[in-house]
Length: 606
Image (cartoon, rainbow, N blue to C red; front, side, top):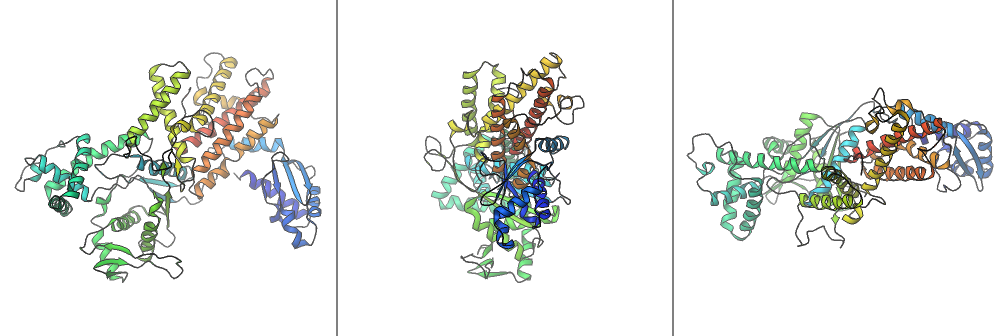
């Protein structure tokens, strides 16, 4: 289904051609003077020089050709040569009917779907998630969902940090505390215990204690490095202990990510590609890309067109140890071999822009990816407190993610129970749903690359550009639909009002029909809905979830304006009322698809 503006522009292009001008002058845009018109075309201005004619003369010629046109209800040529346009109500209604009948509201599916891998999450094993992990999880999850909705095959990979020095530190500290454990017995012959010798709470205490000791005690750090070497060399006791660390940590990670409604398809880490590294390095040497520099192995990635210094990409340190670069390059090799992705999208702090530039250039130069493979880094800004500095606890430390979520849940629970009566369990579940919208919308409504202020009071507000405001709008629509069904079809209704979808055979959606707009606010709402597929296409192509936020905020505002001007449930003209109900169902369906793409849902009441 073609985009709304595209259809209008085509019609305008025909008029330009019929008037003797180039059809491509007929591009239509949304009006920058909504008080005068809905859309505008500036093609006459652009064509004036080419046709040696006053713009207003060209505009009048085109306007004349559009008299009686079925797409436009009003076309006026305005000095010095603008074409002001209003779209016919019937054309808008027919376009929305097409959206309503289409599974994805008219969004065109790709002829050749891409295979996309989104690399987000990136937590280190044995460390609790903190607020620094929030943006990669929230933005990455939304990008994954947008790409899928746009018709592509997408895999989300957590990309765990599970192979570094922290493993050796944990093993060393554990050995100090419990030297009797079989993992440290070189002569152990039996099976290692099935149950881990620690809980997640103990593990999260062990690592920082070990890390602090290693900074003060050189011998301790040397022991940890030796333990890391043993793990990476395959010593059975170290491998068995590592498996326990992985199982306990991953179980906890899954619980915490689930609280954010974030799911990964792949739970791979640095350990999964260690066997790939030697062959990859050898090939880079053999092909003449990797060379020694101050004892380290590097690949030059500087290009003649560079205007700033781009350092070489280091593959191995002088002691032969691998780095993050090495692991990330080996991960690319693994992904290309197993999944043949057309596109790789990475989510990290924007301070890693240079790092990914080096890695991507190295991957291309050494032939790890196909020439047409897209490598994209989405560098996000910092989540700051009200003081404008990186978000901290009241004590000044880095806040654990689960503590932040709990604080927001508690604040939302307080607001919900202060303003309305609700059973405790329902209030808790509702506050969980609404607080998730507050966190996610608060983050995603900002352009990813920008820093933003994390303001709990503002984010949890039911007014303004917030997640709770969007949900309140959806809940309001659900309430109207439920009351309409009860008063029209009786108390039982169809039993499907709150979950009407296009797939229900006997649903309220199929018993109502859209009508031409009878008021300005109704038409404005319909025109907002009509922007959906163009917006979604832009959100996918630009990898920009904030475009969805901007769209649903405008859509929610348009609905609420219409709602406050229209007595929907008391309307005596049943045909007109049925048309409004059809419009409400479509509004709700579009809003619910959009919030699902952002990674949250709406309760049935608030």
